[in-house]
Length: 285
Figure 1 (cartoon, one colour):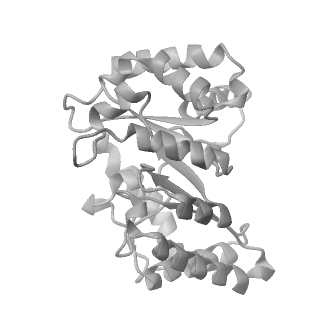
Figure 2: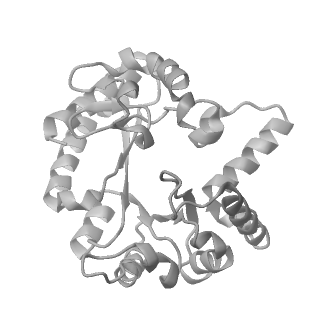
């Protein structure tokens, strides 16, 4: 994404929330592919732009929070200092202990990426950079919930975990619904057996919160991840060319393209976004 497109995102969003008299909070998730491939100088430039817009809108007390999803293989001390200085929070792709993670995640030379990721997680933790784990559950790894849970919680001391099922054309990597159900039930049992309030397993936390609120007839749809919120598309996905989609999982589904940030105003696509999404996506499961 070039600088002018990024500036259009910031200005568009600031105009939108000011016109709707909303609190000036913008959460930016840098995603890929692997976003660190863009290089440190690229992100320094983007932060200069962010800081300039924050300064220009300081009377409105705009708050911009940066998150980045990475496989953590490219992180070094310079990156860590950058994350600290700019208050980034990181999501790290790690599927479990070494025998699970390295089964599918390889370098070009066919060596697994596990060792370098663990080394970089330790460095990030030492420097108090906030991190969470995104763990992809395959048919293979769904058989080892206890190993995965104990590794993240006991060995790595992770406080935020998100489990994402690998569903890709129902191939040999994809867990069945029964595989995934058994996995999550066991994860819940393990989580419940400890002081689970200190650890956020995103899917399970949302299920519990939504169940409690349903019992007490409390409506908080915007509190939950999109799967449980009652509507989709709360987080716009904007591609490098400025094309806008209602979700990062649905980019390049042509019928769901909502516009382009270099050509359209966010206020003009926000309401159609939900209508288009809820109408069009029924066939996507």
